[in-house]
Image (tube, rainbow, N blue to C red; front, side, top):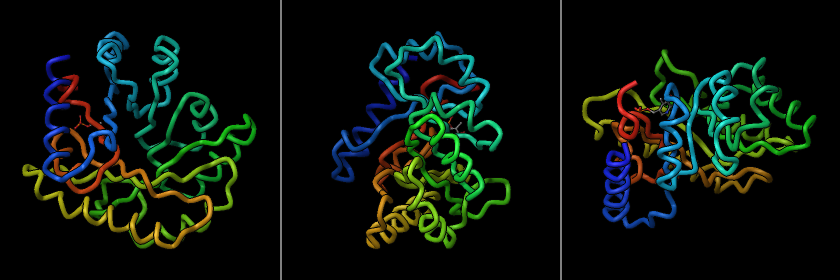
Length: 225
Ligand SMILES: *Cc1c(COP(=O)(O)O)cnc(C)c1O
């Protein structure tokens, strides 16, 4: 597993070199969903501090046993009735895809006097099987959220389609990047577009080349689920 991690980090470095980017700009989120805490700790011991999970119950079970400086990223679809439970634990929620969910996060975050970092999930490819806002709805959402005091929009996230050839997703990543550029240019109060969470095991190198600042890699580090 440590060997696999080294390979991923090597590929990250090469993708940064190809695209003239600084490796410091790209955070590797080790997607530890379904994997036991021991596996996660082995990766923690290699210096990784960011972990991706997609189920609230699993977060609640695993993370009391993980060092406090590990950052938990909620990358899966989040139901409103689970928000209260999970927000004390998470560094960032990558999967905000509706106003109703955002409202619930604002409400519960206010109760515990925290500001929760979120990304808006965008369904760039308009896949019916996936959650996420359509591109044309993101700006409207951002304008609603700018006044939320306990929720901080930090950028955008997408789950690209499953493809055999990662190159096929390049255009998806380019579109998400451009959307962030366009929204950033509007200088909206309290809205940040610095984070682009895109790229998984199959396509993270292409995502880095197209501007990802967070990549979410599970299988290539931990093996198949
Ligand atoms: C599982 C998952 C990943 C990691 O996928 P791999 O192909 O195993 O790297 C990334 N993002 C999300 C949202 C996921 O649910």
